[in-house]
Length: 122
Image 1 (cartoon, helix red, strand yellow):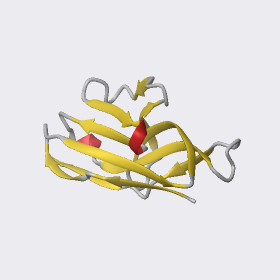
Image 2 (cartoon, rainbow, N blue to C red; image 1 turned 60 degrees about the vertical axis):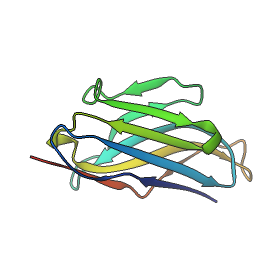
Image 3 (cartoon, helix red, strand yellow; image 1 turned 135 degrees about the horizontal axis):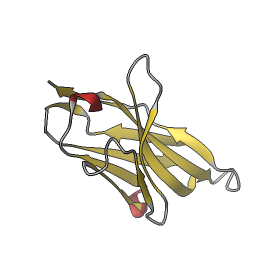
Image 4 (cartoon, one colour; image 1 turned 30 degrees about the vertical axis):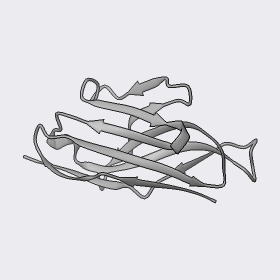
């Protein structure tokens, strides 16, 4: 059993900053790529950023230069530092991870957290 738990969301003014965290726990053999996605009700969930186990990073064009993704492999944790927030960043942010479990170590499975709300006031 694996769980992803996000934290750090909240309400900020335009131009403000937030730092999101996501911790993976449970019967984990290895955590591969981790990432952040966001979703507004009625819209598709969209890619924000990913980071591989070796540190290779991809960002959505909409957040380049403002957001920074990082991870702590020893803690099975991924972070998203968000600066210069805009109203269009308002969404529920979801953590994602590709995980090999101790019970199915040869079969990578994508796991999702429950999400954390980010609201940027205009």
